[in-house]
Length: 116
Image (tube, rainbow, N blue to C red; front, top):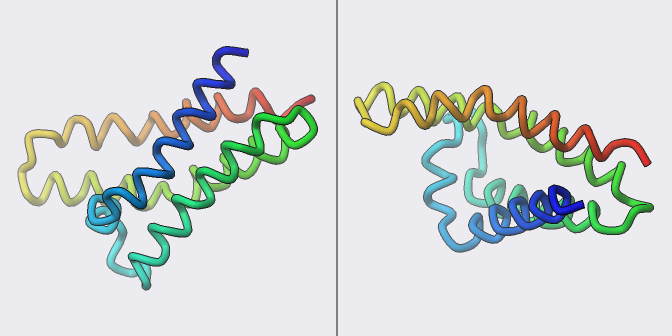
C-alpha cells in the first residue's frame, strides 16, 4: 500500500509543478503540438486528478488506466526533451534518454492498480 501512496504523491507533486514552473514543460513540448501553455496546465491538472482517483478503491482502476493513458500521451514530450538535449549538447542528455524507458516502468507500476 505504501507504493500506492508514493505514486499518488509523485503524480500530485508533478502535477502541481506544472503550475509552479510551466516554462520547463513548455520547453520540451514538440513544436507540432499547439497551445503549449494551456496543454501544460491541463496535463498538470489531469495528473493531480488521476492521482487522486487512485486513493479510493472504487476509482483506483480508472485512475490507473487514466495515468497510463497520460503517460503515453506525454511520451512525445520526453522524446522532444532528448532531442533538445542532444541538439544543445546538454550534459544532462543521459537523464533525458533514461526517462524514455522509465515511462515503461511507470506504466507497469500504474497497471498494477488497474485490477481491484
